[in-house]
Structure formats: structure tokens, C-alpha cells
Amino acid sequence: MYNFEFAKPATIAEAVEALAGEEAQALGGGQTLLPTMKQRLAAPATLVSLNAIPEMIGVCVNEAGEVCIGGATPHATVAREAQAQYPALAALASHIGDPAVRNRGTIGGSLANNDPSACYPAAALGSGAVIKTNTRDIPADDYFQGMFETALDEGEIITEVRFPVPQKANYQKFVQPASRFALVGVFVAKYADGVRVAVTGASSDGVFRWHEAEAALSADFSKAAIEGLAAPTGAMISDLHGSGDYRAHLVKVMTGRAVAAAS
Amino acid sequence: MTQVTMTVNGKAVSGTVEGRTLLAEFLREGLRMTGTHIGCDTSQCGACVVHVNGNAIKSCTALALDLDGASVVTIEGMANPDGSLSVIQQAFQDHHGLQCGFCTPGMVMSAAALLKENPKPTEAEVRAYLEGNICRCTGYHNIVKAIMAASGQDVSAIAAE
Image (spheres, rainbow over the protein chains, first blue to last red):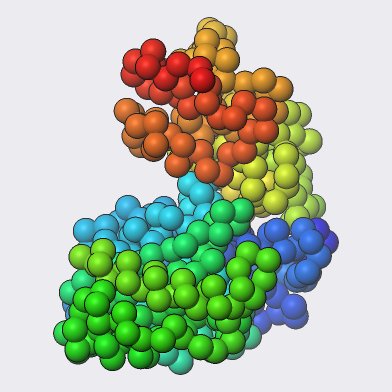
């Protein structure tokens, strides 16, 4: 990879200042960014590590009962520390990549990258989470704007993600075995005011909500409720791992499994 | 070039690195500790796994400067103080858990991380934990057996097939 200046700020304010520089790029755990830089697909002039900012690391529960995860918290920490409050979220975190990747990759990095096959976007959208940055709070419904596209502005940092805890939830991932990303992943969460269903891996528009399934499951939270639904349509990804029709079919299958397994 | 300081296998070390210097490169080229292997260089294979502040990570996908001040343990730090093999290393030898040996440093470091958090793993748990460590020789069977044996479990039922 091309060389760069390296900065490791200790506070969010210092990080924002460092990111204001020309061609500066934030570095989370680097599990996607560093391989991308090795391939010279990215070549920032300055890399600003967010890994030494204590206020951005950790899992807690706020006064509203939401699970709040610091933007620089590794997946392995979420898997351990969110288990009691939000087991479906912890389970999702515990199956990202492999153990060594989970010790390094961060929730903020995953959400800022918004890979169309990543797991965390499904949890954030499926939970109606709020993505908190150094400047504002962004509802998940406004945050994800297409493949690798988000509402984040240049230099904006995800400092925390707040997840309302559902009554029941589950995430089902159909693993693409070479990459361990989701060929299709479906996050189902049942809240008092309705059910949310978020799908990753399937669409070239990135993570999306399957509204027909949400309506059916809000009326009757059972696998049978979605059996009569047509598989979702839209810009499904078609590649050597699976056609668009296959992915659309998998969305329905994985939704059913998530409903059946939700707890 | 910037100064980086860390603790490697209990000893304070320092060196001068570029921003882009990976931890694996600092260990191998800066410190001449070549036990940590670079296989794929894309964080797939796990030959470069080391422990940083107690957690297994892929040292080909972490910057040395990002780990300034960290405590690192590599395969060179795994043997007993008298130089004899650790329990895990000895089990790899006893159960023929390696053939060419290229993946072995990462396998041993991942095994040590697994046994620290799960002292008596099932065979399925061992296999799941090793999903980020690739071996192209053994078919994993004897690696899994060695790790089960190192955890003090009876492996006589896991006969070579």
C-alpha cells in the first residue's frame, strides 16, 4: 500500500480536527480498509485511527433502556457485553468474519463502510437504531443510502450506535463460505409497535427493509404469516455465488427461519 | 518514519516504522522475529495470528503504529521458560498436527486464544474457532485432535480416519 501520515487522537474532538485535513480517512479496526489500501483501491494522505478514544469504546445501557455501543467497539466485545441485554445482536456480532477479525473490526467501521453484504447494517436497520455522530443523531432509516453509501458527511465520525431492545429478535445468515459475508442475511425484530425485517447481502442497493413481511408479521408473528408472500423484488445481486432469483428466494427462507428462532 | 514502542513476549522493544508498516512486517523485518508468518496478506489465512493485549488478531491487517504501547505475544513467546515446548506445541507434535508447518504459528496462537476463553471446547467448537486459520496440508483433523488433547480431553475416540 502507499504510505500515509498516521494520527492517533485520544478524543473525538482531536479526531474531528485530524480528519479535516486534505484526503484524511478514519481508520476503525481496518479489517476492510487495510486490505483495500493494499490493493491500492484507497490511498488516503492521512489515516486517523479511532482506536484510542476511550469515550468511543464499550457497551452500556442508557436511561431509555437502549443498548449503546461505542463506535470503535470491536465485534468480540459486543458479542460478550451485549449478550445479557440484546442476545440477537450479540449473536450477530459473534458470527462476523472469524475470531481474530472480530477482535479488531468495529461496529462504526462496518456501518461507515456499509458493505452490501455486511451483517451490522441489518441489525441497525432491523432495530431502528440511531447512529450517533460527532455532529448529530441519524435514524437508521435515513442512514443507509445504497451500496457503500451512507448519510455520513466528509470527516463525520460514528461515535455511538443506540439500539432499542426488541421483545424478540433473531438474525439468520446464509454464509457465503469463502468470504463469510452474508450471501443473504435477515434480521427480524419484534417491537411493541410492530415488526421490522432488514435484509443484507441480497440487494445491489444495500441493506433494505422488507415491508410486506413486516406488515404480515406485525399482524401475526409466525412463520406461516409470510408463507403466502411473494419473495421481494428489486435490484437483487446476481453473481457467481447465486442469481438474483436465488437470493430473493433465500430472503423469504431466512426470514422464516429468523421468525421461528426469534427469542 | 516514526518511533514505535511495544512489549513483545514480555520484552520492551522499539523501532522506526512508516505509517503503512504492518505489525507482521515490524515483527518479521524490524525485530527479525520470523516465527509469525505472512501467508495470504489479506487476512484470510491466519498464519500471522498473534495476541495483542490478550486477544488474537491477524498481524497482517493491523498497523504497527496503531499498536504503539501494546503488549504482543508471538509464537516465539509460547515455549516454556526453560525452552521446552508448551502444552499446545507439544500436542501438535504428539498428534502430528502439522505437515509443512507454514500455518502452524497461527494455528498455535489461535488454539491458545481458544483455550483461554474455553478451556474444554468440543470438537465442533474447535473447528468453528479455526475458521480463520487455513491449513492446506492436514485436512485439519490432527490439528483439531492436538487442540482437544492440549485441553486435557481424551482424544482416543478421535482416531485418524
